[in-house]
Length: 103
Length: 162
Image 1: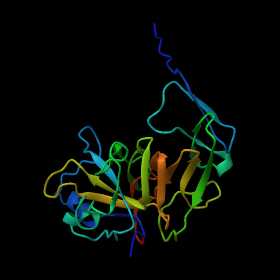
Image 2 (image 1 turned 90 degrees about the horizontal axis):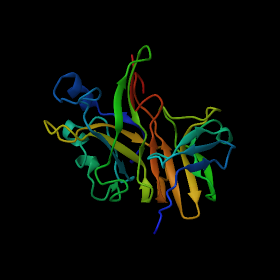
Image 3 (image 1 turned 180 degrees about the horizontal axis):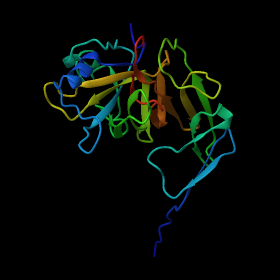
Image 4 (image 1 turned 180 degrees about the vertical axis):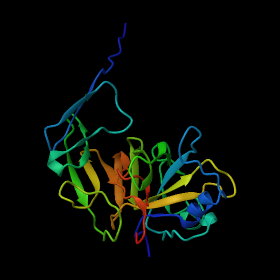
């Protein structure tokens, strides 16, 4: 008789800090955490054992009045890119369309 | 010209306030809103007519501009989960949603920004645009066999400071 082996937990970690997470199922969204290694940005975890690097991308363009997302030091960060052996994930930190005088 | 900023469409705001478009952005009967990804061949303009805010119209024509992959980030965009208006902060009204993500095997290149539009209303304009957001990278983004996630700003997708 064949018995299927069901994964009952998924372990997540971060290459930039020591935070870890265990989930009972694979979440629809990649779980995130406030990452000390990326100046407090909410960065995605990576599945435990996945060789990868996770880097924050600062804006390459003028902020020019945009309400952008910033790291803990106030630098405008536009994305967090996870590079794996077999691919690349991108989490863009979208600005806010701000309706305010002069914006 | 190309992408340079993030804006709410002027005519859409006027249509909502003037009851010309029954766009329901929050509550029990909230509409379905989608985020469609675009490359840098377009020049978004928040002052266009209502018809030209719509998905697959004007600058937002899909052919040659939209970035998508079937079953990953679908053509026409991915639906926003839990869109809601928030008035918990004094002098501020903002509209937010849960972060939006592709499937885990998405391949997409030259992603510069997104159009957020109402996929529910059919008249007077179908798929009327709400706003567009520039992702702030003059080189665009590429995803390879991975997940593309739009992390909406903690201040909301659109925000009115009164």
